[in-house]
Length: 173
Picture 1 (tube, rainbow, N blue to C red):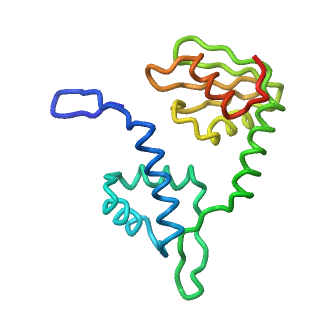
Picture 2 (picture 1 turned 90 degrees about the horizontal axis):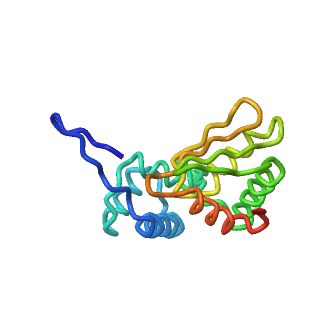
């Protein structure tokens, strides 16, 4: 990530994975403990716990956690987490879609190309996006049978494969 200061471009280190995991754990706890009605309220609770995050980062965290809103029974809404069964079922669906659609995985540096069966590139890219791999900057699904995965600087294709196998033990070499 780069930030621009007057005439200078500096590299800003990416947040540590441990910090993000701790923040996600804290968000889950806060949503289970309090009636959180807005991101502003949640940001306030996170700041009290020592997490300084932007609204954009919080939005990404909420999306990753698949946080939803339900009626509070009055005139408002509160944040809610999907049940463990629902979350596990969703993850199993993504894993199934990935395994059903991919043919091969190859890489060069921090760029990965996943070849897919015809018509499966969207499902495979969506699966990679939703497996919660912090090392993935993003995916681009080709029109038909290729997915391009861009990894964070310093992350190799071997690192990506190791993490994929942790998420999908059935993944073949």
